[in-house]
Image (cartoon, rainbow, N blue to C red; front, side, top):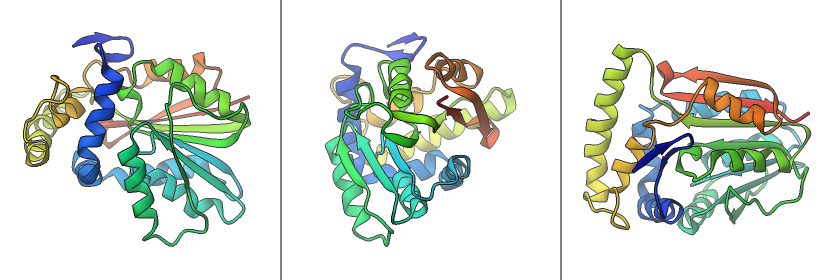
Length: 249
């Protein structure tokens, strides 16, 4: 595995990541809660506050997974709004649609299969674009951010959450203990240590993909390079996650 500006890269990464998320789809939500130490919903509520006001907005959630962020958007846009969730993995979309059937939302989310590096939407289609924990799974971060910028309307907002590695040495020690031991060992209950496509087992990848991944100022620069203004980033949970914000002029 090779560390580059865009994080860990290797031949066949896109297909491998798709296979990983197909494998873990049914227990993805449970493990996300574990990986975030139970704080993931709080991170998402913070994203919603940064996106507000959302009433009547057209929203796109990229790399929507099982739809958690998309559902929060749907709760807030009202009956005149629109929410679309797009993901590369059909199994994730299938589970998101199943979950939606048990929720009382003012509108239905439009879930679609699609690639974050080539969004099949017209320029200036959405008022808000969100994404959670997707960027480190891509082969080209900059292209994905460029695509988010392209589909936003002028004045639109982007809000993206991504895992990161704490800088503080003491915090990082406990973070490493949590990720490498607790998360990976519990992940074994599901992935059985089985390699996928001859590479990492699922939760070896999901915990190690943070290594060498750009965050904070380095990631904010990528949003600026795409043309976003008023770019900011927020470190949460002692640096275990960063949330990025920008506006399309």
